Image (tube, rainbow, N blue to C red; front, side, top):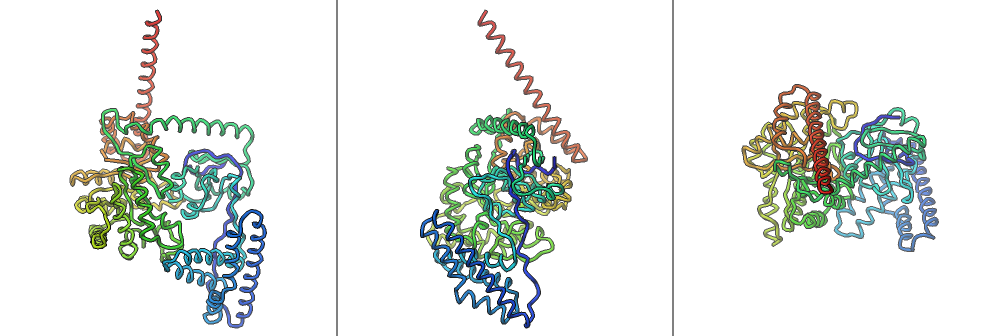
Length: 597
Ligand code: PEP
Ligand code: MG
C-alpha cells in the first residue's frame, strides 16, 4: 500500500496510464557561426520527419474519416512548406544565431498571436494549425516522445508527476477513472477542478510509486483516504469494489436531499451555492440543489483557448449561466490568473514568488483593456439574471475604487451604445489576504458583499505555500489565527450591514459547518460534490448550539484542540440522532402492536 493525500473523493479501480515526464527544455545559448549549416540541416530533417508522420496519420485515418478531416493534414503539410513561416524561422537562425528549436518556438508564438488578433474565424483556425504543426516540429527537434492518451474506449487511471489546471481542462472526464500525481496538494487548482469534475484524485504520492508504476499496471486508488494499491490481489479488488458500491449508495441517498430547504432545525437558512469554472459544471451544480453560483472562476474560460476570449464569447457564457440559474444568484469573479494558473498565450514574468506577484486584480488593473472587456461582458449578462461581480486578491481600498471606476466607465460605454445591463449590479470582494481582513471594515463601505477565500487566506495567514507538499502539514485551516481572521471579517461585514459568505475549500468541509453557523455567515459556496454532504449535516445541526461550540473553540489554543472539539460535537449529534431514531422506531412498533392487539 502506498500512502498519498486524498484530494478528491471516490475509488478508482483499473489499468493506469503513466504520463511521460518531459517539458520543452529550450537551449539558452546562441549557436556558433560555424554551426549554422548543421542547424539548418537539423531543421530540414525535423521538417522531413514531421511530413512523413503527418502523411502516415493521413493514410491511417483514410478509412475512418472523410475528406474534410483529411484536409486538415494537407493544411499542416502546407504550413511546413509555407515560405513566410519558414523565412521567419530561417531568418532567426541566420541573423540572430538562435538554435532551431528556439526559432521554431518564437515563430509559432509570433504567427499565432498575429492570426489571433484578426477578427476572422478562419484565420483563428489557422493559428491552431500553426501551433499544432509547430509543436510537432519542435518535438522532433528536441527528440521528445509523443504523448497519446489511451483511446476513448479504455477508461484509465492517469498517473502524472504534476498536472496543470489547463492540462486537466483538456481531459475527457468520462474517460478518466481517477488521477494520481506524485506531487501536488489538496488546494491546488488542479485538485479543485478534479473535485468539480468528480474525478477521484490522490496527490503527493511520490516515492515507491514513482519508481515502480508503468503504463498498463493494475491499480486501486482511494481519493478519500489517499491509499494506492499497486497490482492488487483479487481479495483487495473485491473489498474496494464493495466500498465503491457503498459510496455510490450513500451518494444516491444524499441526492434525495437536493430539493430540501437548507435550514437548521432551529430555523437558520444557509444558502449553499456552487463553485464552477465552466458552463458544463453547472449541470452538476443544479442537480446537487445549489442555490446559485457563489464563485464562477472565469480564468478557466481563458485557459481553454489560444487567445483572450472576446467580449461576445464571454457574454454568451455568462448569460447562459445566468439564465439557467433562473433568478438564482451568480457571482462572477474577474480574471484570477497568476500563481499556479497560466495562459499559454499570455506570458507572465518569471517571478521568485508568483503567488505574491503579478496576478489576479493586479493584472486586471494593469491591463485595463482586458479588464474592461470582461466587465462589459459581465454587465451585459446582468440584464439576463441575478449577476454580481467580484474582485479577487484585494489588498487595499484603492484597488476596489479603481476597479469600480473601470466598472463605471464600462457602464457608461454600454449606455451610449444602447446595450442593456443592470445599473445596480452588486459588487463584492474576496477576502483572502490578511490585509483585507485587517481593513474589512473599510472595504465593507465600498462594496455590497464579501466572500471569504479560505484557500488563499490560510496560505497567506500562515505563510504556507498551498502548492508545496513538503509543508502541507502546516497548511491548517483550523489554526486559531485563521479562525480569528474569519471572525474579524464576519463581524466587520455585520457592522457595515453587508452580506458575507465563504467560497474557499473550507466551505465544503462538513467538519467546518459549526464554525459557519456559529459565526452566522450568510452563505457557503463549494464544489458541487460537497453540497449534499454539507446540507445533510446542516439539517441536523442547531445554530444555537454552534454558537456555544464557537465560544469553546475560540478559547482553544491549538488547531488539534479545535478539531477535537468539532469531532466531539459531531459525535454528540450523531449519537443524539441515533437515539431519537431508535425511540421513533420503538414508538412506531408500540403503536402497531396496539393496533394489532
Ligand atoms: C480562495 O482563495 O479561497 C479561492 C476561493 O480562490 P482560488 O482557490 O481560486 O484562489
Ligand atoms: Mg484565491
